[in-house]
Length: 279
Image (cartoon, rainbow, N blue to C red):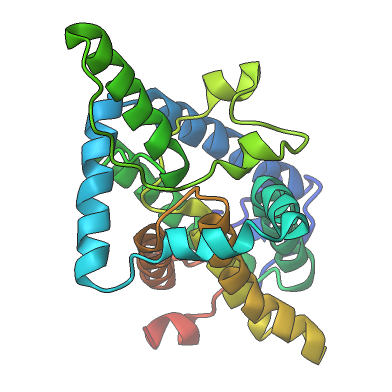
């Protein structure tokens, strides 16, 4: 936000910051709405061919094998024996991503307004950077792999009448098996969601943002534990539900790190001259 001008002083501002700037709840809500609409439009318009997304998935899994972290299928196979865990993970993946992030943003705005602009910018930069990954590295998530190879096998069978050999990856689309109140295959979601926007994981980026924002700002020990645990639980959920690979989470944390550095360097609102001179 810019420094308060005389003609804006009478507008309903929630907080005047120590830097001389002001933040308005309605302006922040408008910014978030516009930003997320633009983000969603770009994210969902950059659709690649399934073949390209599948090729990138094989490349990523090959890299993970080299790094000895290609463990998603083994983890999901264990979790599939615990149906309540799968159902809980489905709901967690589809809801907490928004609920917790919005809650933390409101908490910062109300209780730590001088810190809010820096954290808002951090999250905005990280989310915008994720679009680069979606645009340049379309990635088929684990839950779609077997469906895709089955379609290829069916097509090959029709061409020459033979029964092609199919490599099965063993992942289960948990939301298809145990539907929640929302579904990737519903009419609205199938049109609005880009299934190949998986690298980096925005779920993980936002979860780490929540943990960083809360860790030093909540006093209760259990609240601190929950804050620190939240990104770890999110990583487990994206693997259990077969929506992401582990390297998607690493990339999500990386873009948040870049967002942190840029917001720390360029955000002026809420920060004193002494704080800025120490950068």
